[in-house]
Amino acid sequence: MDKDIQSETISNWARKDNIEQALMVGMHGITEFKHDEKVYYLGEFKENVIRLLSQQQVAEVVIYPEIIHALKDKRATKMIINGSISIRFIEKYEKLARKMHKPYIVRSEPEFKGSTGLMVISDEAIETQIITVEDRSVRLKRLGMPSALINAVGKKVCKKCLQQILEVDPAEESNYNELTLLDRIGGEHCPAHQGMK
Ligand SMILES: [Zn+2]
Image 1: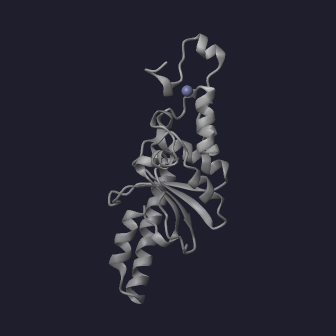
Image 2: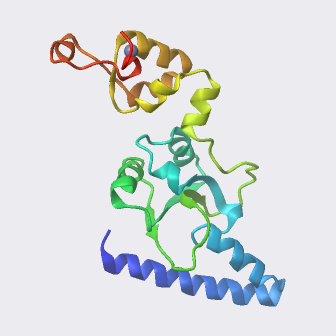
Image 3: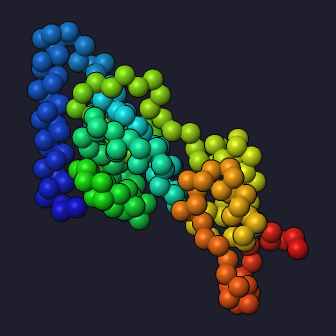
């Protein structure tokens, strides 16, 4: 993103925050509470968050399907990404947002706190009870996938392993490739069987 646009966005946010604060002081006198909340949600109100990933989850190889799902939500208006995360990790989500025609903003403020990495935001208050997403590895382990296969994400695996993966979660298909005969001749192995025969 263009540097000027980005800094303009940040100052817009700061300005908006001030207006909102002023309104809230007048109406409810709860400005400090709301401001505290916003530093944990990259400058947004928690009630507007549809889905949230931690910084660690954004740094994973895969794109979380929960975010794709959230972007499809009619109430979703934008994606906010924590600018303190390395560009090589956030690129895949920027690409996703462009593909799904949703605007995204990379935002960094020194006062941001917590582990929020990325959010899908609505302009209206969302009645979502759970906005966080279970770690992919935790979820797949719970569903019975062996760790060796979970960790082989993005790699080529044997046909048998690929079948096993699809049995656990068909949506994981896009995260793996099948070893070809040529790969095998070239000396590649299924990472799930390393050390075994
Ligand atoms: Zn295998």
